[in-house]
Amino acid sequence: MNKQEFLTQLRQGLAGLPQADIEDHIFFYNEMIDDRIEEGIPEELAVKEIGTVDEVIEQIIAETPLTKLVKEKVTPKRSLQTWEIVLLIVGSPIWLSLLIALFAVVLSVYVTLWAVIVALWSVVLAFGAAAMACLAASMILAVSGQPLTGLVVLGAALFCTGMTIFTYFGCLAATKGIVWLTKKFAYWIKSLFVGKENNNEQNS
Amino acid sequence: MDIQLKRGLLDVCVLAAIKDADSYGYQIIKDMKPYIEISESTLYTILKRLETAQMLTVRTAEHNGRLRKYYHITDAGLKRIEDFKQEWSEVMSIYRFVTKEDEQ
Image (cartoon, rainbow over all chains, first blue to last red; front, top):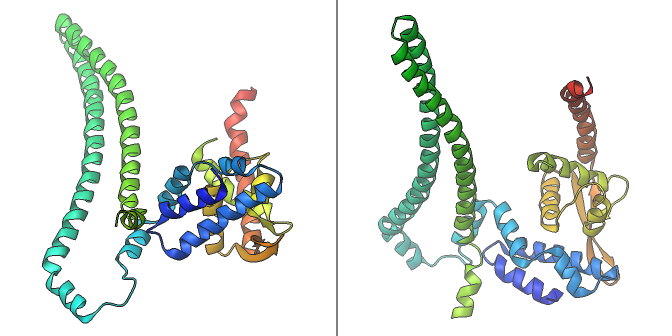
């Protein structure tokens, strides 16, 4: 890929960001590639050293606040006509409720993911508490003349201890996975606002 | 290196790279390379953040018939470096505490 192809793809991928921001990114990567070429690195290699366009776009989107992306999307490119304003107000029961519904869905997905984490850790905690309770019970049983029952309860205590350790590592992995998932989800939400405009232009 | 730790260090490293003389993107990456690896997109974010925090200023100048952005450290940027040195002496004393048992 040469420099021009890289910059064109970058520009397309960033459509949806404020225009000034796009120009700023293009200027930066253009300079980076030019400086490498000036040092004697072949153009294709200079572009390769920057990384793939997708990686660059992904990082830019990840670091752009969602509010900025939404603002750019909803700010009209020209001033609104009177009839458009009237239509916006009249239609507000529809679009406003749809917007609220969208945010409710996004929020509920987040809450659900974190609820899973809370539930999993509750299991770990429950096993831990059961282990300690069984241990205490087995001691009481042992000294109160029921050593056999005590032994059985001691076995249960050991089982619960084992399960505590076992589920702890499972939960740790699950938590990490869910945190990763929420990051991916946030990226997906943001990517809805970026790169769309250009696709529409190509389609139409 | 731990990602959180690296993130904190990168800001100061970029400031250090422009401390003695104004510098530009590719030069900053090259100067930092022997000590800490940094990607273009990460550098971009850091430069923006430091500019917003008024720790550096940007000027565009011509170079070989094209434009290049040069970064200049401000007093606030120099202070950030001094603060870092101060903080780091505390970190070093914690390091000595952590590694104390290894020596015995």
